Amino acid sequence: MSTIAVIQCTNSDLYKSKNPDDYCISSLKKSGMFDTIILAIPKQEKSTVFDELSKTWGVEIFYGSNYNVAERLYDAAKKFNPNVVVRVLLKRFYIDLELVHNMIEKIKEGFDYVSLDNNVNYEVAADVTSFNALQRTVNLLKELPNDHISNTYRFTPWNFIEHSEKFNVTIIDYKKSWNKDKIKQIKKKLFRLVESEEDPFSKIEDNNPASRYLFYTKFIGSNDVVMDIACGQVGGTTVLADYAKKVYGIDSNESYISKSKEKFNKKNIEYLHGTDKLLEKFPSAFDKVVSSHTLEHVDNDQLFLERIRDSLRDDGKLILEVPKLLLYPLGEPLYPFHVREYTTSDLEKLLRETGFEIIEKYGGNRNEYVNIENARNVLLYICKKTLN
Image 1 (cartoon, rainbow, N blue to C red):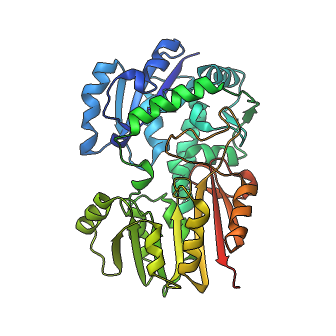
Image 2: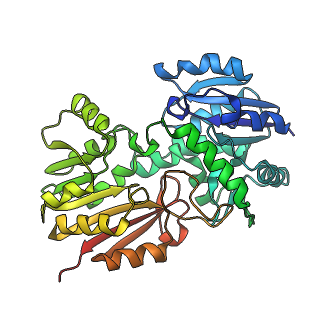
């Protein structure tokens, strides 16, 4: 059976290094598991850097849809008419190819798609599907409306496949734990690669139809004054500004703030350079505070949450999203700049201790928000401050 690897990537996935060993390229080629390896890239002017890279790396290249990832992957693969499609993200030089091999074998047994349970860090794996299932997915997604949920499926089609009764899906039991030396070496390499890079969570595009910030807006009122703390490069802040009365975007990276002031000029956004300590100047000032993928970076997460609590009005709410701590194969954060990641029990205990009452909670499952018990990679809590 013909098996191809389709590497989903954008210009932002490139480190300063162009060594194929620093990406999944070398591992995939050395494995001998693939008849063809293809870079599937959004059709954007800044993506042309891949023209030369594809030649240097000795792989195919395809330019396709930006946000309809399902369509891009299918269009990249169809020229080769494979039986099995393995979708990989470019940066995963640490991919577990033994696991991927076992997933491919399941497709050969007749399954449409192979999944992993929610205790596994998907960063070490791939999405493995039959080409027929990918083709059917693209056609079925065309029938869905142009709304946020449908667009998250187009952006992350694996969720759609897993939820649909039209596909034969199996789950592989993966209880492998990597040894500490291996984890240390991977994180050391990651640190070298990303230490001069911008935080990937800062790059929230304001026009992404599957943006997590669009989900946050369901908790924002038209008269709300909102703080987006660690706003990054403000695509998310801009989304919030379309729903709130006023939004403050604060970030410790002065470059992000300068770029934001130049790029976005909405009258109801104010940008501030600083850390969470700046919140002490805003006692009881905000109806909502949004903290998206920040808590895992701060040295003192308790103090961070206490400052947010004190900046909220009596009926104010915190919208908090953090990465979920996954048991296998690492049992610790992969990204070297994460001080910690969270289990539901640890995070809920921390929220209670810092003066919050949890009123809603969700699990992030690759761009879709589901019941928290089904969380695959993130935890989202909506909390109100408790009054003394």
